[in-house]
Length: 406
Ligand code: LLP
Image 1 (cartoon, rainbow, N blue to C red):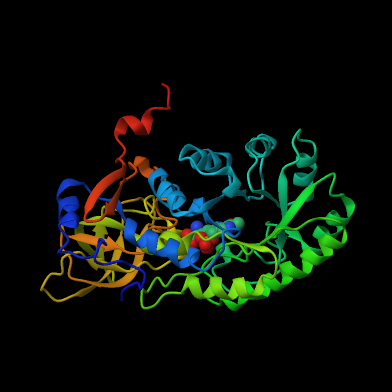
Image 2 (image 1 turned 90 degrees about the vertical axis):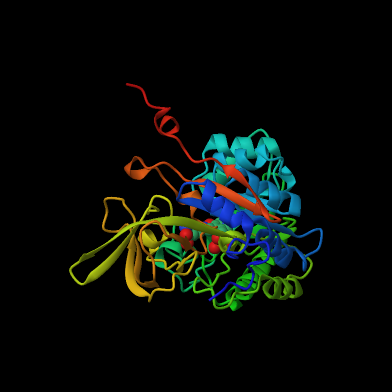
């Protein structure tokens, strides 16, 4: 039960690693911990098979910590942003606007104007009204049509984005009619993009999507538009059971072999950072209610929402194995919601004050966190070559209330 792309030597899971012991001694739980080596491994897996004209744009929604974004930018990645806030984050860390794409189903006029002003690589247009708003801007920014491919990623319904009745993208039929309606003088249509969904295990779907995008590209070109890139979105799964992993480099190789003369663009989020991060928590106590034996820990749904929201299963282990026999626990947090549960039947030998590790939490963990129940957001720590640094400090009560007025 170990992720392939986790670098144990520099990683956090090696309990012999002094940096981990230091971190445990010096920080109050819960906290997020990431390993730079693992992030760089994922970067390499994506970047090693592309050319300089291709782009891998990290989906910032998966993890928007500034230091992690900086590492990704330095490794050569661009960014896929979905809000003015995410755009400001990547500009803040010095990202090259020419490597930024802006997706999202409800971009405001102000957000569109900002993106146009920055001359980003592409605004990924998701509806006809958005295109009209772009035409009214002073600048004529590079745009791509985000297609709704009417494909199922066969994933959790909340993270399916490519089905015909999802709110995302423009249907192929409408996209063709928009490409016909607006001339290349009116719109600077340079790409086609789509995102099937997230946590996709069948990689053939990306190739199927690429064929769709290629066929649309030739139809757009017939109306005089010059398409320079095809963007297959993000969505490659990781194995939350950590038995094996989906290999981005194989997928990228196949996409490159099939993309033709277009530049290839990808928008991975989860597969870049999920296995590089974990949430460390401490056991508060044990109790039994009905047939269930609960382990109450100090991390909760506000820190890692995925189990509550999607019934997602993140593996949990003791950081230091006890010799005692393991028992089956339902692991829950302190938040006042029954949904605040990491799941049933975790085999653990934990007792109060033991540290537990909640794996695969580098993506959609911290970035989906909240202050629900007035809980303070946890620290984030980066392990880099055997030492650690704080990349987000733990919130204080003053942070929590600083925007409120009595
Ligand atoms: N591009 C677009 C346009 C997207 O909507 C997404 C994710 C991505 C790229 C990145 O997808 P990834 O490679 O991370 O699968 N909160 C959910 C995931 C929501 C994903 C939404 N869109 C979760 O925790 O599973």
